[in-house]
Image (cartoon, rainbow, N blue to C red; front, side, top):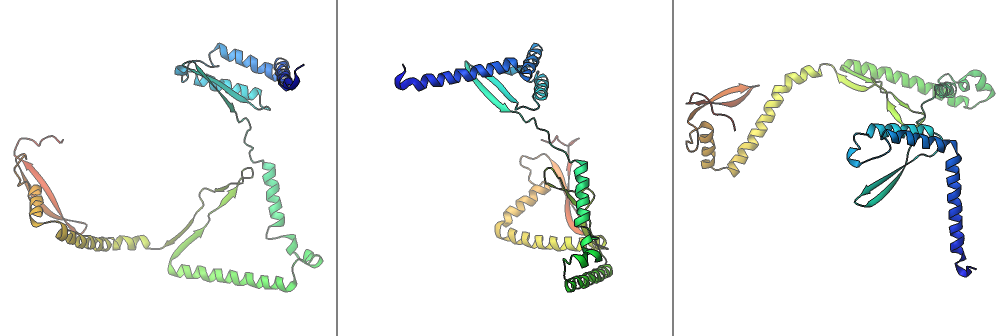
Length: 286
């Protein structure tokens, strides 16, 4: 008699019973036997584990072993179990592998979908025909006439807008196209389709006005720079910088002669400094 501790023995009995059933399944099921055969075959060539230091060498073999196991258990849940031993401590990791393949778009489904769209959403729908219009009046006659007049006004407005753009010299295109994948419901943009607007002669005008814009920006920067120098730089400091640029500071400097040439670059006056060394050749750069 176990008295109040009988549940412990009952639980242990259930656990042992389940373990025996699992072991019996492992030694009798065909898939399990195939997995064991694959493991034994891969273990002989060293693809079923080893030292961590040599894992990079056998990574290709282990990947091949994993693919073989996934093919054997294509219709089952495939778990990858790894035992990592380090300084007497063993760590077990369990990973559920994704063996389901992504379903591609079925051409038959795509064709059926396109037929459905053409039949029920197309411009020449049977609901808008005269036969269906009289037998099944989905729209009232006055609403249909109003819709037709609205369509005519939209077409005329589009023509006027195109003429106006043509007079202004503006070219635009709205050919951006996108599609939806049936299996993932994601929107994908189609290559070589885009929206753009271009005004004729814009590049030529930009080239002509480039120098004027650059001169205005240079004048604004020079005005700000002169103000900053007046507020933060003293006259002796400015003189020291000019002497250093011209090589007049002889302390800790190689004997040389510096000349300043004023030239114009894209309409702006710039200073070019050229150094002439008194020796046979210039010193090596640091």
